Image (cartoon, helix red, strand yellow):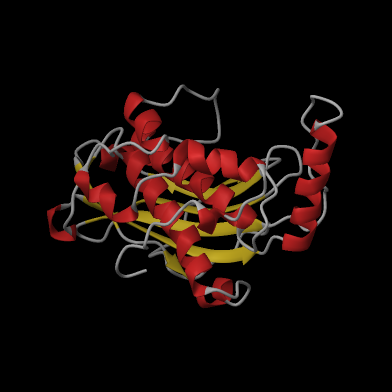
Length: 254
């Protein structure tokens, strides 16, 4: 997936490049400016005009956007108090989907059938077919009340045939990758440094609880709905579209 811009950020200056094997990103974070910030507001994620062209259903576009918003809200809750009104926040986060590479639903269905059939023969997970994979590109920033940018990221990631479950939907892969972006950007704000280095850490108790579909730490995150948790995980293993398990109506403004 290429890094794409939608010109939604106040500045693209001084971004550091991270060209990982799976994730590409340009980012910056002003850790000293984050020290005194305590409250944060998450704007509903937007879908750029270019990204909207590749996905037929507006409800599918909104579903991917909502997953990003939900992941951002739950992620920043590890450090900040998430508020319901922008006027009460020290920081405001805006995210925009710049591109959605559609999943080939026909190939995904074939992959699911092949994997399920093989599992009856050998008790070893079978990778999906390495064709028709989707992807996602997003950009986001965090700004102060005065409009100063304290964190920014242009991000892109494609699905892979080993760890990304095949789902029979145009947004099957983008839906899975949306939470990955939310995790990377929120981690950068929480730690004040790059999220792309170091060993993975065990998620906090509040993130585990919310990820399993429990009540989020702050009521402001409820507008993005609760994660379908284990129900969605089970559905993804048999190729069900994410719209079958994630019924959340997108937050107003998406």
